[in-house]
Amino acid sequence: MEYFTRLLIEASLSKEFRFHLKCKNLRLVNLCFADDLVIFYKGVNNSVQIIKECFTTFSLASGLSANLDKSQVYFGGLAEEKTKKILTRLQFVEGSFPLKYLGVPLRPTKWKAGDCAVILKKIHLKLHTWSSRHPSFAGRAQLIHSVLLGMRSFWMSIFLLPKSVINEIDHLCRRFLWGTNDSSRNRSKMHLTAWHQVCLPKSLGGVGF
Image (cartoon, rainbow, N blue to C red; front, top):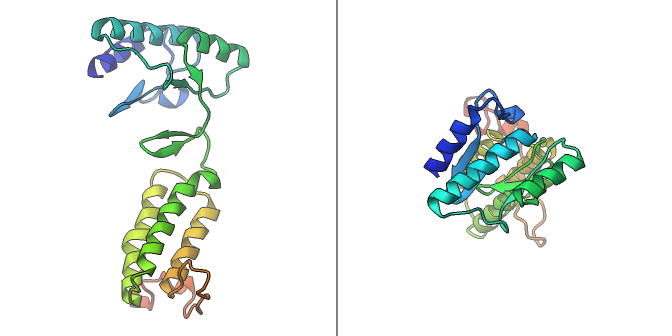
């Protein structure tokens, strides 16, 4: 992969090569992690031909070739006629968004609420496990602060989460803090303090969320 990356970098120096619009300033051509390889370029004939030649050169030198069943091409803003020509030249199938890279769904636009199901699912699993252990109020507050809100902050550092998803995470945290779990047999307990007050620093009477 290091050799293939060098091939792509050298090929990108050609005047015929066109970078992807979002990768031009970084002069980024590819990302490689484990057995995943993502290549970015502008959907014009010259760029496609250069990428194809890099694949051929790499295959002749290493004996390796792209798996046609596992390789896909993703388009954005190209006419159907151009997409067909590129697919014919590369012999890959057309993929659809969102695609997953390192377990994270990616799309060319902002995340939709449906894309965030993986986040809510992880939170639900943790809440289900914790609720069965009947932690104290201090324990629930610590779990929310260090784990649940930590997960939310991690995802928010990568993507702009929809407001509905952020509100749902806050809702789950509120229910867990006051001793309510996901079991239908347990009724919602009264929230003794408003959530915005709970989020205040401890010096101001909050929990420090």
